[in-house]
Length: 192
Image 1 (cartoon, helix red, strand yellow):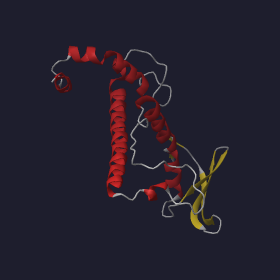
Image 2: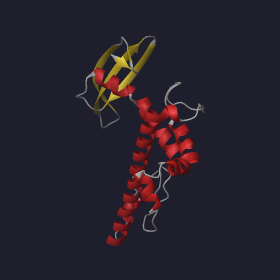
Image 3: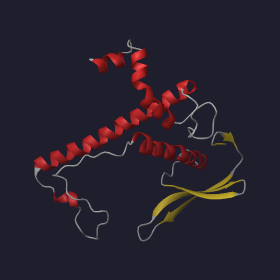
């Protein structure tokens, strides 16, 4: 199989077993031998083949790196939306204790709460779009960014820099780039 971009030989065995206390749930366990490494992967989707579960697990690193960049470079989870209509949420609820959201009964308060959650979702969605655009610029225009290689995109590379490098470069030079290219639509929108 292809794992982390390389063809590798692996051994695996799939087992569907019940798991959990009292309320048992059937899970698909995949026992994997990859070189000297032994791993146990688990999936709730019993329709997936073992190779699919292994391949999807390989994407975990990419997803975690993207979340890290979303958090640290874009500040995509640094929203400050709150509403006085939202109840104080508790991290841990005792058994049988009602959820704080159940205390919101007024329809106007519920609507304000929905609007607050919508604002949070829109902020995170715009951050995801910004992250995607930044990654496209990074891959396409890395050769034009000065060689300030203090962070790489995912792995060390002499050709592609990280999103953080491109972000720093854009912050320092965006207005100079706009001044050199007044015909750009985005510059005309900002100027208007």
